[in-house]
Amino acid sequence: MKLDEIQKRLLREVADLHKVPEGAYNIRSNSTSAGRRSTENIEIVSKTDVSGIDIFIKPNTKNESVHIPVVLTESGLKEVVYNDFHIGEGADVVIVAGCGIDNCGNQDSQHDGVHTFYVGRGAKVKYVEKHYGSGDGKGKRILNPVTEVHMEEDSTMEMEMVQIKGVDDTDRKTIADLKEGAKLVVRERLMTHGEQQAISTYTVTLNGDNSSADVVSRSVARDNSFQKFDAKIVGNAECHGHTECDSIIMDNGRILAVPGLEANNVDASLVHEAAIGKIAGEQLIKLMTLGLDEHEAEEQIINGFLQ
Image (cartoon, rainbow, N blue to C red):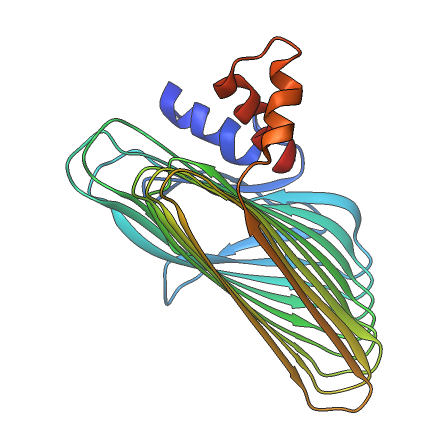
């Protein structure tokens, strides 16, 4: 792989890659392939009709991973990428995605990634998606991910969605439908600052008996930034659904939490929780008595909150 130091730094931020990863990978840099490897059990194939790839994971594949990070360093570059994941029955894998944009120019840079997951019966997937922005240009860093998940019987998917720094605008859409016994767990961590805007929309439909979803977002809105968390769970069977928004608001930040629960079955059990507030004064005082100044105390609290 031929990558410059900025591209390597972005890969470390979004995928924790310090070298070529073990296992299967597809690394995309400025709309071109920077490297790819398939394995015996995981095949990566380029699409022919649109920009993107198909990832085929064989049934019963265990303890393997696939990395598909994207980095953009050209100001003004805008792209839409379609990636489809076909996870075979009984597989147990880790998928690491994410996008990093470094924009030092005056034009907006944008990556829209559309990911569709077909999770086979009894399969287990851990999916990690991190977003990061850097650069001192006036152009924006824009990320609009769309994630669509189709889960077969008794499958499990754990999603870790992280955006902590540098992304000016993001509009995240996640749609999932679950069959009998399927389980979805989402953990979102988000921080906005400056004039940034972040919108997260989740729609999860529980169609099978004993299916469940647990969607939790933790966020911090600083300066003049705005966040919207819109989570809807639809229960069409005997199922369990839970959404939670836990947010810290600072400076002139704004946060809107929109709960949505739709029960279409008498045995659907659905719960939503939301809490928005500033950092408690007693927390600051406690840390300041240990020798931290107010700014250091705030950062310590925020870092712990977003872990």
